[in-house]
Length: 266
Image 1 (tube, rainbow, N blue to C red):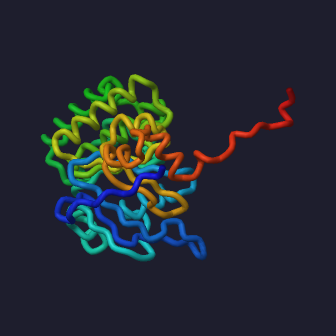
Image 2: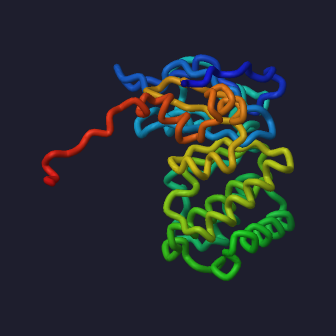
Image 3: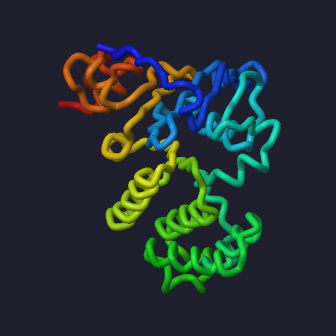
């Protein structure tokens, strides 16, 4: 049974809100009139199959793409009217990480800190704390080109945390990292939300989303088909289902026959 979306919070309680958010590419509608409602202080898992429109949505929310239609409010501000004010309060870990490969890890963070106008003493303190917390202190002077994929993920996360944001956008932060790095990142994200921060996360790893997220939205073919607190979605399913079962039910995979491939032989 597909859960019904519960009532949403009042606008004043939202860190992120969209109304009719739409993005088209010619005749293709990648994001089709979605109404996101992300409460302040929540960990929001944004899910969907490949090609559902998740990355396009995040690009609209973070200013990399201009929406074709609809409105956005981020931390009570209009990012299209006042993008600088919004960016000062937001951290982003994009899927491609957006790091400078020919700079060291420390130099990458110094660049980010200067873009945000952080005082030198604040930049130095926060850089040291983040590098130590993420296990990168010994590699601060190493070129990012020589970092492993997991190290790059952690450095990108450090850059997102550096300006002390109120809202984090994370696009597949756990992809391709080892169990130890995953644990470090999960602990850091949990502490951030515990201090009142808000996280908007996309991930294909449903187990991680189920462990971390307290709110979920599921996108399918560009449309937001389910949204609400995790506990209410489970209760609405009628059987306390796992996130995987809810997800598969929503996107129509649950009722597909398993079948067999005859060409594999007996």
